[in-house]
Image (cartoon, rainbow, N blue to C red; front, side, top):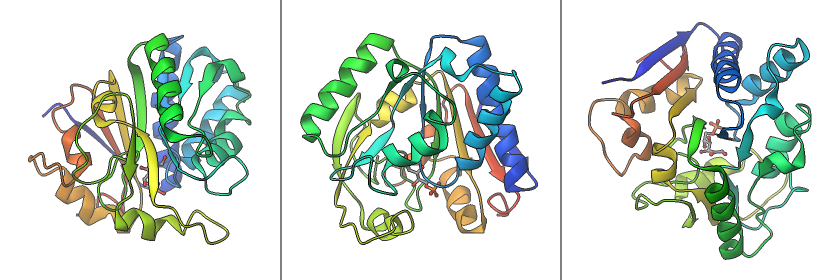
Length: 240
Ligand code: F6R
């Protein structure tokens, strides 16, 4: 298998390792299209990238960005929406010009949201790099267990695990049941894939996911065999 595995001692080191890989990609591939996950795990990476930019080590506005996913019904003013997380933790502090970013708007008609995302993807070509997190059910973006592999943006019913875990992102009760996401085929077509995981709670999942067998019930396992896949773990997530 061509998978590379990096094990960092701490979350901070994991964030630095991941940000350095992304910065290298951006320096070497200006004007390419990248796609970064929201969620908790990559937040340290985003703050490292912003620091690297301030130190003159990378220009984060050299590439174009596509949103990965969004909760249908949530918008920029909802704490925990992917829009809010990515703008507050990355696009705004990194001062990425609006013209370089296209994200899903969970308040729009989802069909239209998907069409607009597909237009953006068609204009920018396939993904150069994607930074993904892994859900507790193995989901990538909102490619939930057993969702058929699709190209472009799709509307998906959220899995029970995703709904249960979702409360950690929100500051009030937000009943979410559907999502929009880039499909698995689009993610798998990225030239480079970084998958980041942190903490003991992900250790068993990581072990089950990368056991050599692809299983649509665990979407992240479908990454196996990708020609440029790097698994970035902290010591706790790699424990098993
Ligand atoms: C978020 C996303 C999700 C998360 C995954 C892990 O945009 O695409 O697939 O990456 O649920 O989330 P955390 O990092 O919060 O464990």
